Length: 472
Picture 1 (cartoon, rainbow, N blue to C red):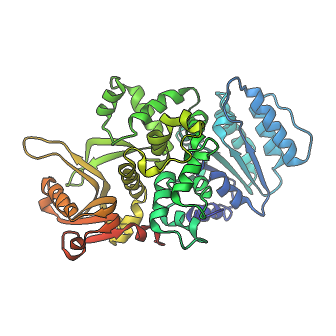
Picture 2 (cartoon, rainbow, N blue to C red):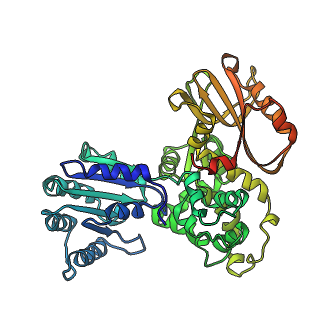
Picture 3 (cartoon, rainbow, N blue to C red):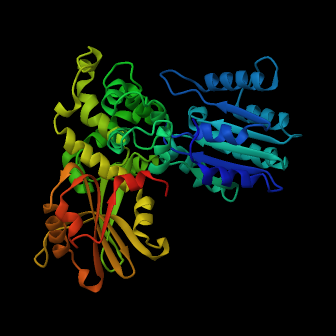
């Protein structure tokens, strides 16, 4: 099922109006729909697709070249081709497509290149001497290991000025994800949100949802059965993206599976000293889309030195909270009949997952507030430490415009009591620099509101989650 991606598709189609060859980079997390997007773009055209073999113990450059040669033979109707090195392989591909309009996809390019440290340089050389001379050619480099693409293509001097378009695929916006239930209008907002709290807007996971099953049944089938896609997905992600370093990255995300942490707090939890190695690892996780770094801006509109890290990917956090420590029991079938509500801190976890979902759909919130994007100075979770002058303060989401501070509280509960208004007023009272602006409290929520909330003027805007699911 292909849903959304209109903006990305429009950008790709715009390339065909150019009169020169185009080099395109498409990146994003595993299962996000990169290949599906490119295949849809290539429909009805002369489209050639090649992909690297997933990393495994003992795989060699010769294995990758042999596989590429087999794909070449299939693509051009010949016996499998044999290549001794990547310059020869890529040159052959360029030669066979030199006289035609063609779209070429090199998928999982970091896997293709994993055993040849000079792969990127050879690709650049063949692009300069062969590929680019075909003015009807679009060459697309695609991969899940975004750090490799950044280091070897986008930030490499050799490719400077050569990349015509970079497409970074993120999770589907929440209103697009909602379209996976378009043939099941009877499904409630609550059930949809419970599923989205686990899957996020990842298309491949959303495709697994069966509308004829309840949210609980879907989650149990996908997460708590040995054959479920999301039971084994975590290990595949880390093995395929991080290879030998997967254990190191897993330790970091495990430490972040609870509340967001400053880097110093993360170091203490990991029992390590602050080093450049940890900073580099966090940077890779942020680039991959697994982790978010929420920087703090003060009320003057200046970026401070404060920031916290959190798991951005809803599935990864859910896995670490509920699947990872129970894998043996799940394999024994002991979780098939579990009631999710009986899991430890189930409702609290859903509340956090919902908060994450909202933060990942910031544009939908901004639209509901009717705030002009160009007027926004910052929009992120906010915190301040206790000092002699002011109290500590933490705000789920602070949207700062030229004249206004929108203090957003995010709640996911069966019943939301009147005390939420007092809580938000308490946070506002602690917020430094607020007196220079209009302060507008906002409640983004799912659940039954206490009647007094709707009658009072405590919140300038109430945004039910159902509005975020609706078309923006």
